[in-house]
Image (tube, rainbow, N blue to C red; front, side):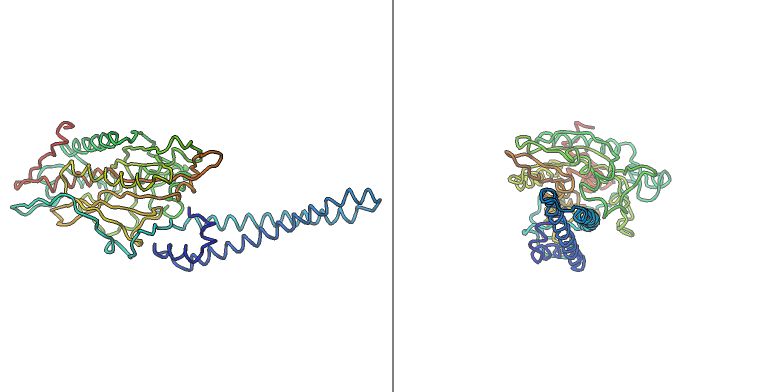
Amino acid sequence: MINLKLFQQNFDEASAKLEKKGVDISTLKNLKELFSSLKEANSSLELAKANQNKMSKLFGQYKKEGKDIDELKAKVDKNKEVISYLQSKAREADNSLYEVALAIPNFPDDSVPNGKDEDDNIEIKKVLTPRDFNFEPKEHWALSEINGWIDFERGVKLAKSRFSVLRGESARLERALINFFLDCNREKGFEEIYVPFLNNSAMLQGTGQLPKFGDDLFKIEGEDLYLIPTAEVPLTNLYNNEILSKDELPILMTGYTPCFRKEAGSAGRDTRGMIRQHQFDKVEMVAITNPDNSDEIFDMMVQNASDILTALKLPHRIVRLCGGDLGFSASQTIDLEVWLPGQNKYREISSISNTRDFQARRAKIRFKDGKKNHLVNTLNGSALAVGRTLIAIMENYQNEDGSIEIPEVLKKYM
């Protein structure tokens, strides 16, 4: 959640940052009005409490002077009712402010470029040169038909559209990629963790998926449980409502999970093939850090994801996201986009995000430095999306007859 005090004290500056992310000005004005309502309610409550204290002190004086206290007692009782009413009003105002604030995205860093969507993102650099084919490269679904790797029809039969079945060598390759990614991340100091694939609503609120993005989640009927959209949720929330010591930081974690998303806003996009699925495998990196080394760890995570792609000899590019394309919780994001020769374009395969203290404030993750508690910074990123890496291998390592080579670094896993 955003720093509400910062927002209140610097409304114009904070509003300009949020408008960079596409937040409507009317929403921000509503938030400002709620601040005023809360301030007014708290002011009236404090005044009533001050009157109560003042009158309460008069009881001793009245008794000492032999005065009748019945009238004073009636005033005190009346004021108690006023205080109870004002406390209720202050709670209502505070709850209203909190509910609106939960739907406000994170402030973007000053380094985030202006822009409306992915067309305004800025390429930082390209890594590796795409292969020069002496034949027309096929897309992954065509290669799948030749090799019998992906069964789209039976995936639909088992579930519905945007589900698929991997068979034979592709299933082995999926497993090999998961192990390779986890091993690479462990070598960089990330602790491997295996987490539940179902989390409760408090955890999803902690990392920002709820309440705003409930329509994109698969909920378990009759339970306060959701299938996780990413391992970022359980890994970050391992420390939900905890106070860590300064010496424990940074905490670096990695984990494999399947991810489940309704893709509610993607109707008509990537309907063919395996680019956009309701269920997909991903290996995630999560860091919980002292704000002082947050940027350093962010750069390390970007480099790690790039190094994995380089080890697989997959050409890719590194892109800085503009304000309009930035995710809800992110303060800044770097995307890695892998080259798909069959599609003749780069496609996202990893997003590395620094949320600063946005998730930490929602999830109450703090660290103790001396006598004071401070909010941590949390970071997350894919290393990597497994299905999209499999697709990239299929298209980049294809032969003219449709057969597919296996990257050298994966051969020991297969």
